[in-house]
Length: 103
Image 1 (cartoon, rainbow, N blue to C red):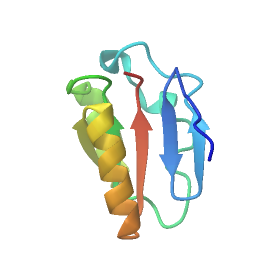
Image 2: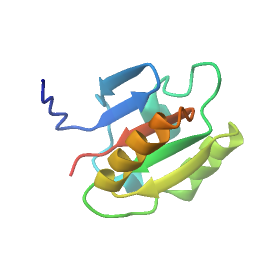
Image 3: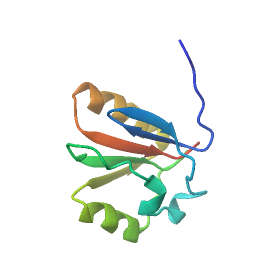
């Protein structure tokens, strides 16, 4: 078993897990561009699980509006809760993506 550490954050889709190379330093600086091609697969994800670090922080409204304009919901929670939710929802074969900021 391998334990990988992603000190700058993690992007997850149903087909891959990537180090979040251009993660913002804080959730308040989050932009749609920071997610790269996270939404570019078929079928399009139902929603984004946004892990905001050690505690829950609300993402910027312009970011949420930009994601919702793509037809994708945004669920913000602390990164530990988002990681747990990822496991449960993917076990249900839900089409979701996640962006997890570091603790």
